[in-house]
Length: 189
Image (cartoon, rainbow, N blue to C red):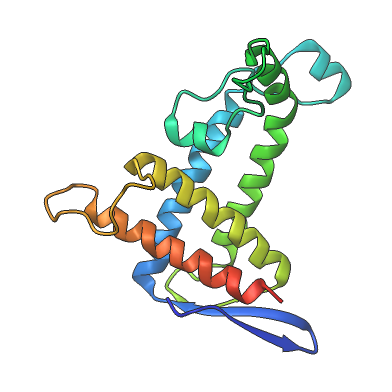
C-alpha cells in the first residue's frame, strides 16, 4: 500500500492511496471477520416488551465472552479503587443495554464503508473526508481485535521469533498501524 495523500479539488478534499490485490484481500478478510463478530453479537441481543412497544432497541447487559469483541465493546464505567464505590456491574449492564446497539451500528457502518470503497482486486482508493473518518474507525477496530487476539501489549517486541506462530500476524498488525497512522497524518490540517 502506498502512503495516503490529500488533494484539494473543486469537488472537495480527496484522500488517496493505492493498494495491491494481496493487501486488499487481507484487509477485506480482517474487516469481514470483525463485522461477523459484531453482527453475531447484535443478532444475539435480547428483546423485551418495552423495546417492542417504544421502538427503542436494547442490547446485552453483560460484556461479550470473546476477548476481541470485549475489546471492541468495553465496559462503560470502571470503579475508582481510591473511592468506596458500589460494584459497577449494574451500571455497566444498564449502559450497555442502552448504548451497545448504536455502537455496534456505527462500527458496522465503518467496516462496511471500508469494504465498499476498497477495490476487490487492488488499485486506487479515493475517499472523501467522511469516508476517510470511517476508515479510521474501521481500521482501529480491526487493529484492536487483531491485537487482542495476538495478545499484543506495550511489552510485545516489534519482531517476534520466526518460530512464534504470531510472527506473521504481528507483521499484519504493524501494517495496519502504519496504514492508520498514514491516514491520520493526511487528515490533520
